[in-house]
Image (cartoon, rainbow, N blue to C red; front, top):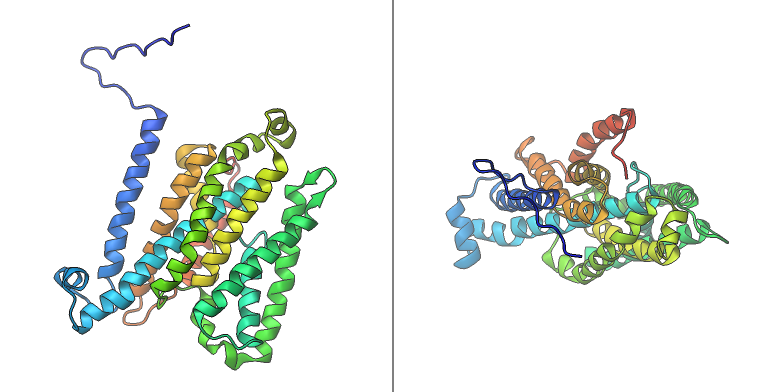
Length: 348
């Protein structure tokens, strides 16, 4: 049986692009916007620097102070925003697909609370002050919470998304309370962490990104590997099982991926809320319920949101700055209310 060729377009009429072409065109458009924001993130700051200085800083370096600011401050900040944004967006898309909850984000499973509590212990109890030192505590904290949530959310019949969400909320609440108590006991130890606690990408060296990038690459591969099974699981566990989906393995791989992403992003930038919640919704509105496309769009749209919020935080109170975590909270709170009040949230 041979496939029928699509009918030729009538003379004088343009062929309408199919869904795949429109999605690819949207990805290209998002990539262009992301590149523009990366350039803007390097150019825009508390002081104006000419584009020619940026060019010289990259390709004809000298000891000029403006070039120093570009190479050692603004360029690493843009790269950190790109990587952290990608991680947060993909984490949110994974969690919403895994829990089948359109309001889920890394905080729902307690991942950011686990990472924050581990950093609090590292700083307040063990005396670790360097970001590269407590970064691994954040990843370990997110991993431990993930294993706890996985154990508490499992039954004899397998993992339950509802039990996992309940376990994540409870574990996260306990860890946030314990972390606040530690900070009250030793407030001096946490003065240097104020910007980290507020969620910021400023002042992070590129070495942090290089250390965490292999883990993000593994998480990215795992996420796209389970995107197909997650599509089937959106129809229900029983139907997915009849299609040959291995439910437990899919959930374990997804949780490993989002642990690496959430733990690494929180370690570098601190807790940044709402990015993982908002971006997958926007992606779903554009491409529908197909997880692979949602993941691809989330990887590009989340750094767009994060870099735009970071640039906005630099210019609204010049010469001072607002941490990007505060800006996303201002933007995200009304969005969350709108999502809750919608009669029909974007389906998973």
